[in-house]
Length: 294
Image 1 (cartoon, helix red, strand yellow):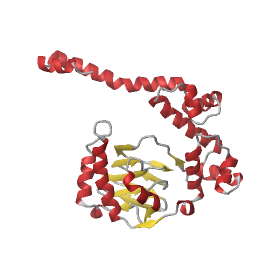
Image 2 (cartoon, one colour):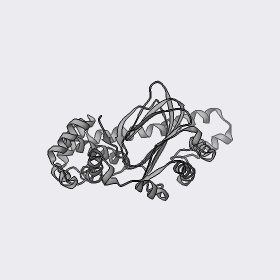
Image 3 (tube, rainbow, N blue to C red):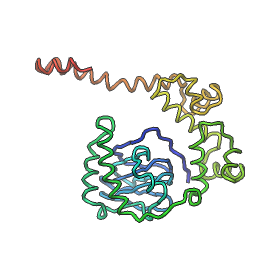
């Protein structure tokens, strides 16, 4: 089974996912899923089972998990960092649930009401404290229904998880396979074997891919120069950065930034067109309000 470490920059992502089928991955954030309709199968570490409407699952940090929709499913997905939900750092760091899936019958009415409210909220349009409040109710209720057991990360994470977690913490640094092997107490040849047999890639390709993913986020969310982004992402030279970026994205970094800047401007252009149409047909009072909009 191929596994990859997913790097996220946001503290919270909340959305409804349709027909989700996502390969095995892990990340340092917590991932909560609530089934709205249909059927979806989820695997978290060694535990796999189908989920139905009203069921929910919770993947703790650095647990390998994946989704598979056989026919149709809608799920509410909430992925959050422990920086955002810092009241729960101890639970999510020092414990793991005996069973990471909670059937609908075991979800309290308070949690169901809070989930129903979360479905109507978005991070872009609502105060983050409001989302955090409802999410705190959900997670508190869910954790109380779980049988949590003490967890020692270094002892209980398998080598693949330790490998990907270590790389995720250091990939923006100069990082050779030999350094990783020394840190994990194994040979570099054994790590190469893990990459080829379990991750179906090479160490160099995996490391470059993570750096490119970070550079893509920086290109679209910051005003840093392309040279600054290359070094911030861990590349040793702009030449290496350009070669890796074009290999993964089939675009130059400059073209990628321009393309996504254009895409992000389209909603505003559409809003302006809609406003203009309304101005031509609505009353003078509405016209005045719309003309004052930015």
